[in-house]
Image (cartoon, rainbow, N blue to C red; front, side, top):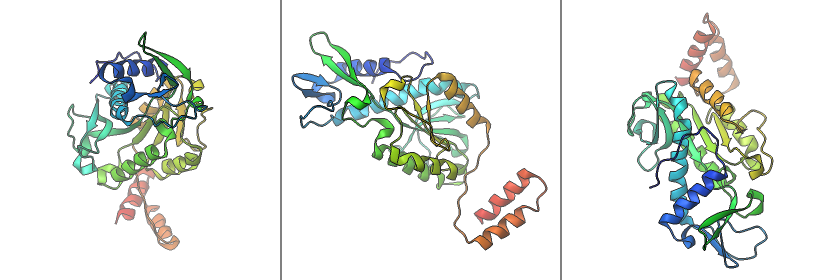
Length: 294
């Protein structure tokens, strides 16, 4: 749909947003991806506007395709360090990832769309969008910055409850699909903070093993209200490439396993006691998982 972007190893910024908007203007009319208020086209309705307008839905597929490709180019160097391929739209029936519910991005051992679960090393769910507001000058064809996320009525990226719920739902589907679904790390990538009401939830999702982390990869802290990591690092904002790289590589280097059970305390105590008879920490862990899975 759009020409390739360069890999300059920087986080998401206004340059990416204006680049996306310029490309939209070559395939859509302003009315199809902006809102017209007071004779001007805005990406989002300003907060001080009383006009009753809705953000066009027609740009959703375009921003989805753009950000998934952006993430592939951004994360590809991390995959390459481990001899892996960063692939958009990965399909794996074992993991419940069909053509209509594919993985937005995955690190895989083979360079193809259809994958076996054992060849997938990391899955990304991408929930990114336009964060700041812009005004379009029809005469010049230029997009001018018009304010940060607090200045408009839009709810982009992880600030949307429906985006959060879709990401959580896909992660649960993968985790409960098959044995290998328990071993693959899942990271949700956005370019805004999570809603205040989800801060405790994302920590619970991390500690329970359903999602490894919700991450914000935006270079400009001024684009939204102060973003801070949650107490248990279920959500973490990143402001530089090195921080993202360090985390992704640590995930790839650490073997993890998701487990979940609902049982009474007596049974749980017996499981722990039996697993504790093994000699090494690794053997204890494996024995515990074996019993839990029975």
